[in-house]
Image (cartoon, rainbow, N blue to C red; front, side, top):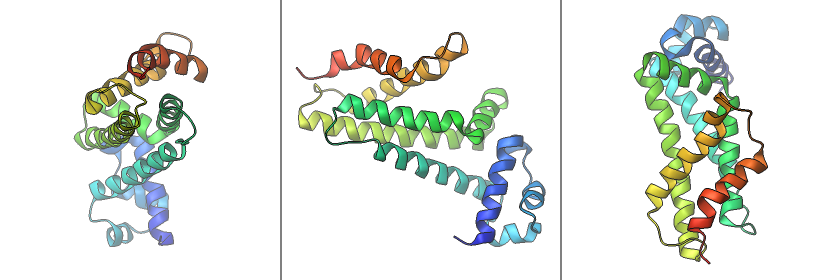
Length: 190
C-alpha cells in the first residue's frame, strides 16, 4: 500500500478512535497525518469512504484471526470458542470499536452503527458457515445455522462484555465452560 495512504489511514483511525465518527474532520486527519487536506482527497473522496476503508481493514483482521483459530483436529466447540474469543478480544481492545460502540449508544451516529453492523454480520457469517460444516460432519444436531449463529454470538457477547459491567470478568476457561454448558450439551450430536 502507498506510504501516504497508509499514513492517512493510521491518522484517521486515531482520530476516529479519539473523537468518534461525528467529531472527526478531514482537517484533523490531515493534521495528524502531517499532510495537506488535498492529499487525503487524492485517496478518499470523503470522510465516509475513509472510515469505511478503516472498518473494512478491521473486519479483514478479525476474519484472519477467526480463520487462524480453526484447527481441523479440534472439536467444533473448541474451535468456535477460540475464534470468538479472538475476535471479541480484538474488538474489546481496539480503541476505534470501543469509541464507535459508545457513539452509537450515546448519539446513534448512522455510519458508526452501520460499521458495527457490518462487523457483526461478518462474525455471524463466519459462525453460520462453521455451524453448517459441523452439521454436515455430524458434530452438531440439525439446527437452523442462521438462528444458532445469532444466539451463540449474543450469548458470547453477554458472557464476555455485559457480565463484566457488573461482575468480575470471567477467564477464558470459565467462558468456555459456560458456552459448553449452554450450547454444547444441547447441540452436540451424541
